[in-house]
Image 1 (cartoon, rainbow, N blue to C red):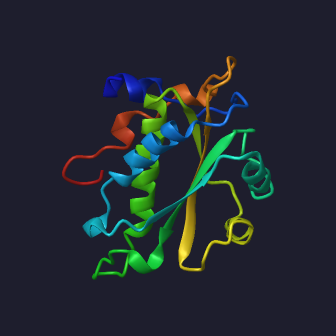
Image 2 (cartoon, rainbow, N blue to C red; image 1 turned 90 degrees about the vertical axis):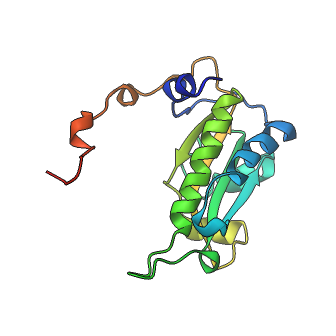
Length: 173
């Protein structure tokens, strides 16, 4: 798909068909995340693929924002494998994981797969439910699947702040 069309047509899908994603499609989405840039190419992302009825049932205990998606990917980052900015100690790994998530979300759209980026989940519940080590930090949840026939964007999808409020040249006003 043409990139401009892809970003214009993508929206957060909250209504899915019950069908799990085929492994080949999952691998394409994961490959896009694998190719995402990360600080110093440390690749601190860790991705948990949930694509069975059992794993999705466990996921539903960690978030109410699962939208009955048949597949989900929990994108995490390894804090111990992060590039660190020397000036203030900021870690690149949360940003790296967000970039990976964005690549995967766009790759899903390119494959005809709807997704919704979910931040509303209990990280400790995820940690306990899926045996996530302490150095691995859950950052984003992509719930995904084939969009149902009635899937449509929320009304707020079509409203944006004027670009002049978010973009500045040379200095902030």
